[in-house]
Every structure is written in structure tokens, then in C-alpha cells.
Amino acid sequence: MKIERKDILLAIALVMFAFISIPGVVFNQAIKKYLTFLNMWSEKPISSIKHSTGKIPPPRNLFMRADLKEPELKIITFSLKVKGAKEITLSGDFNKWGKNDIKLVEKSKNRWETLLALPAGKYRYVFFIDGERILDPYNPSISEIDGQKTSLIEVK
Image (tube, rainbow, N blue to C red; front, side, top):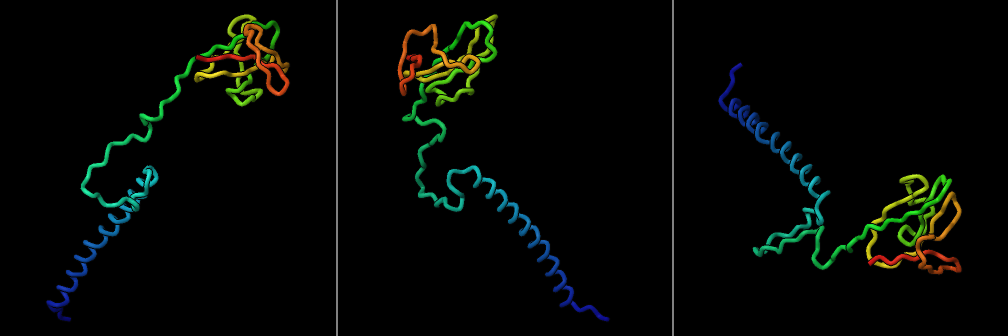
């Protein structure tokens, strides 16, 4: 059996085609995975990005906008002196009146305390001592909501 020159050239062409096309397919799949990964993090999908007009867009920071200022928070201490309490919770406008969301911690004998970071404003609240609703005995400001008295604090 005689191998002709034409057969050798055909075999070389097939080998070259394999060496060129296989990495191209693998590389193409890698690029697709990378672009899919970038689409998860981008505001607009990469496929919808238009070609540049030559103008440089202004820098933008999505997390900090000058026109949206964060409210200044103040640390407010809520405390009570109660003998024999097992659990004291705080409920008010700041936690949508959830009864068991904010628990006070016993800092010393009979002294219970919690800290909240609140923006400026007026807030109504009550304490629950072992499930019994009471007003803040150290705060004389009182408000009424739905016929029930609540303590009132103003954060400035």
C-alpha cells in the first residue's frame, strides 16, 4: 500500500484543524462562563451594554449618592430598675410594636438596660416586665395610641 502525498497533506490538515478548533471551543466555553459570572454582579447584563459613543461617562458609585444622605443615628439607652424580674422587653414605633424583639439585659443587680441606634424623631414605647405592660417610670412624657398610654421619647 502506497501512501500518497495528497493523503499526508489531508492528514496534516485534519490534525491542524483539531489543534485549532478544540482549544477555540474550550476557550469559547470559558468566556461564556466568565460573562455569565459578570452578569450576576452587574447592574445591566453585559449583553445589553451598548457600544461606546466615545464620550467618557461620569463616574458613579451605586452605594453612595450625594443626594441621598443617611440619617444621623443617636445611641439611646433604655433602662429600668426592677426587682425580681425574669425578662424585660421593649416594644415601640422603632420595632413596629413587636413584643419580644428587643430584650433588655440585666447589667447589675435589678438594673436592666438596652441600647438602640435611632434617627431623629419622636418614638412611642412601652416595657414588658415578665409579660406585663408598663410605662417608663423615668420618663414623664406620655402619648396615647388607640386609647392606651405609651411613653414618648424625642431623639434630636
